[in-house]
Image (cartoon, rainbow, N blue to C red; front, side, top):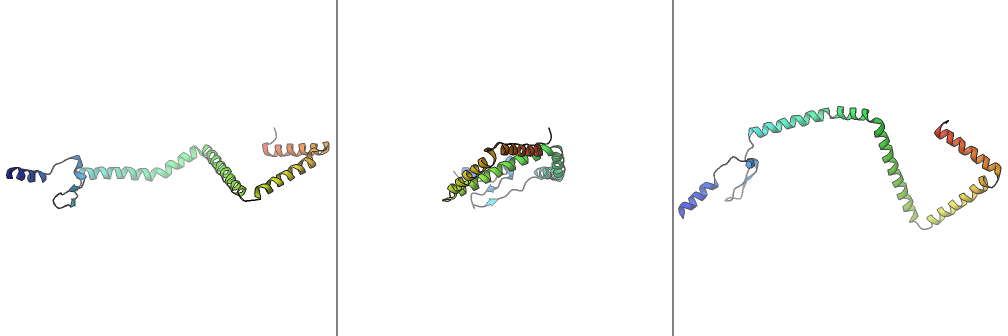
Length: 148
């Protein structure tokens, strides 16, 4: 019985080389954690990886600059599309918030009805004013789209 206890105590203190050598070792008798120093090979690997990361980060602005120069027009277009979507969502959120305020929604409806009545009276009742509206629309169209 005492021989087995002595063998068990000896086996507790046998040092092995394993992949877990970098892991902390727990000493069961005292309850303390002993940190085993990493081998020099793993330190060399860490230095090698550190140099690779450092060189990549040093060249990152050059990579990003060349990427932006190569894809400038699509990136600007994508940015404008995203900005337009965000703007529409913000405007809709503001209108939804205004719609929750009492008497604001009916007031906006009355303003819309009043403007529609004025527009019909001003531009659509007489033939001469309809021609004026057509000319204004065609002038605006050529200003926006250019001569076609």
